[in-house]
Amino acid sequence: MSLVDLVMPKLGESIMEATILKWNKKPGDKVEQDETVLEIATDKVDSEVPSTVEGIIDEILFNENDVVPIGTVIARIKTTADQSQTSLHQPSQPQSSKYEYEEAKIVEDIPYVPTGNLPAGQAGMQQAIGNDNKIRFYSPLVLNIAASEGVAMSELENIPGTGQDGRVSKKDILQYIEKKKAKSHEPRATSNENQTQHPVIVFENKEKSENSQLTTHSSQLASYSGNVEIIEMDRMRKMIAKHMVDSKHISAHVTSFSECDVTNMVLWREKMKKEFEKREGEKITFTPLFVEAIVKCIKKYPWLNSSVDGDKIVIKKDINIGMATALPSGNLIVPIIKNADQLNLVGLTRQVNGLANAARNNKLRPDDTNGGTFTLTNVGTFGSIMGTPIINQPQVAIMAMGAIKKRPVVIETEQGDSIAIRHIMYISLSYDHRVIDGALGSTFLNAVSKELENFDSNRSI
Image (cartoon, rainbow, N blue to C red; front, top):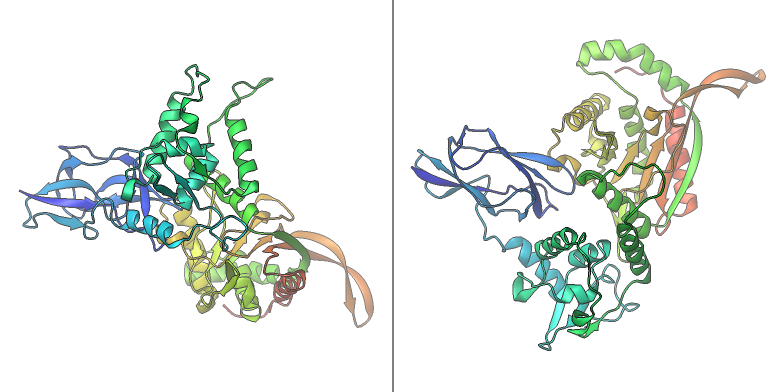
């Protein structure tokens, strides 16, 4: 019998760790090749980890809800194959190697200067002097968790660190918060013994501090008046809430609106949808038509396809369109149509349908939600005539399509003005006013509107 290592697989370029949601096997269980061994989750999507060998689960090294760095050995499988101590998916790495090293490198590379003189993106860095006169560094990740959970710096100083040079890692602070919540129902003594053990140098962002106080206050509410039902947010809802609040703090949101007559597009789809499905085996919705128009306009106005890095504007040459998709749970996820500018209408339709079906059936891969450069959300699907969407960071714009309604409108003809029944839709664009001015935002929005209005009703598939 040989032992084969099962490691945490790579789940995308920007993903460095994953949470174990559920073990489908336990030690002693037989596992077939390609059979799911466990379910994992990242901050973007849930996924399954299959076995690439047939054998028996010999050892499970992590528990459910543990956060594990990519490349870490998470289980071992006994197999009769002659591949002793090999690894599944990718070579094994030391448990604290890549993730721990990169988190440490972020800290070491950022100089310590007071807030106000900090370069963009570094205002979250803090350091404190311990009782051994050594400076303790905290990564932005640890500080963000501490702020959102109401962990004071004095508490942070007392958390034993298991990272490099005794640093407090993400795992350390999450374990501390879990223990703290478990004890929250017990009576608390009002003691300040541990409040002054370490002198602390703190340069905080005032806005973050106020938000942290609000979060702490709301989490300490013990009772609610009236007839209420208390529902704990699930993991995805918590992530969505955090991303939305973070985006509002990061970007200066502005939303512009436009009305467009999409009669030609509606009539063309109605005329061609049966032939399209028969020929291509796919149902054509409005979404690929919207994406097609957006891509054409992004090529004319590339700043809408960018991100902000401090005082730099990073214009993306790849056009990767995210499409907000509703899950059966009611939550939203944004799968990405990669290189949308290189796809024709048939290709866009296949991508849209494939990603939407994968999202509804929880079959999205981690890479399916990475790398978006511009996002489209169709609020009209739910009956809304318009919306003010929140930017999907680190992008600078998001477009919302409202419901298409028949309305009487005035149209101009050679014989003069007349009133006709037309298919009208409101579209809106939320954009980051740090880099997209009102003139550019409105110009882009109107360009998309004109693309939709001037749809060629005689085009072929």
